[in-house]
Length: 98
Image (cartoon, one colour):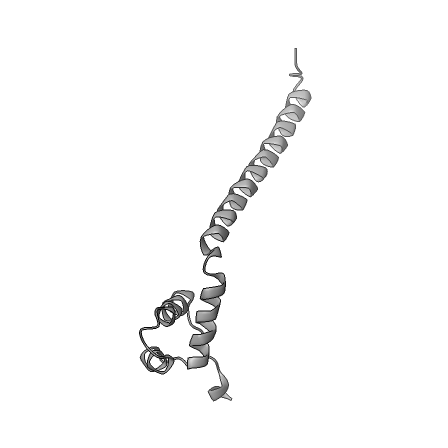
C-alpha cells in the first residue's frame, strides 16, 4: 500500500511549475522531467493558474479587508464588555454617576 501514497507539493512549487508551463518555452514532457511531476498534473496546475491567476491579488486584498473588519468588530465587542464591567463595579462600589 505504500506505493499508493501521493506526494504533497507546496503551493510555491505548484505555482513555479505552472508558471513555467504558461511560458511555453518547454514541452510538458520536458517540464515533467525537470520537476519530476506527471505532465497531466502540470497541465492541471497550468489550467488553474490561467483560470484563477487574476484573482490572486483581489482575493488577498478582500481577505485583508475582512480580517481588518473582523478585528475592529472584536475590539468593539471587547470595549463594550469592559464598559459594562466598569459600570457594574462603579455601581457596586457606590460610585454612580454624580
